[in-house]
Amino acid sequence: MTEAQLAEILKERYTSAEKREMVTAIHVFGVEFADLLDGVSINDVAELGTGHRSYGTEIRKGIRLSKFVTLKR
Image 1 (cartoon, rainbow, N blue to C red):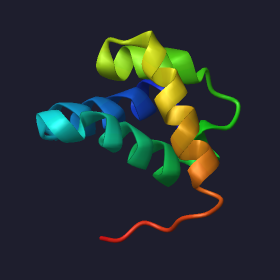
Image 2 (image 1 turned 45 degrees about the vertical axis):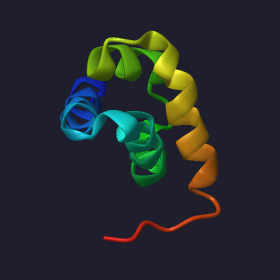
Image 3 (image 1 turned 120 degrees about the horizontal axis):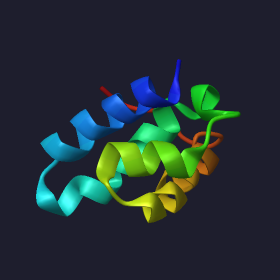
């Protein structure tokens, strides 16, 4: 999956999240797509998806959490 495709998914989730859950949506994105984010510029995905390059840190938190959690649907 390309950076642009990942950013589009992130953008959809970020913009559809409630205001108080926007950062949580970024963490969940990191958990869910951890394997696909390997080798991709996380900061670029964050900037394209949210408009905030600094949210790369939040994606990385999700990636680290992916080793310990599973997502509920």
